Length: 219
Image: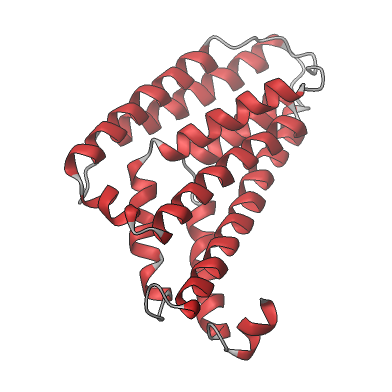
């Protein structure tokens, strides 16, 4: 696939590099996704940070599949569906804020997370992504300019695969980096007061993200 990009057989290299730069900027922009990855890393360590990153790339994959079937445009255009998702997202971010506010202030490093807990973290991350309709709008705006071939053709499908794999890979690296870095900083917490401040800070971030989503609109 990389060879085909480099040769320009499917997509010009400069077009792909422009998409890479744009997606890095999109994924790296601070928001509820990054905040959740950091909260998981800071409270539960590297395993939780990576579980959150996997959850987010599941959400990215779902959006890519919706793009391939042309459903993402319908989602973005439907005012009713947009509103339903928006308020589900607001409620969910409020729930995460409440959970973070009440989280344990024990500064002792937690035990290694088990597979079931990691799965729960991944599900929560995916829900954050999929209940934010602004994420769907991003795919509507970002993908079409880079897909120059006609939909339904082999080249069009190949371009979608390239953009999808790029999105998933960059998103995973971005959110994993956020979570792993927060995990390193979390090791500096030594007292219950510091742990409480950490929890309350993430709670305020989630609450703020929920408030911002509540005030947003499709336009």
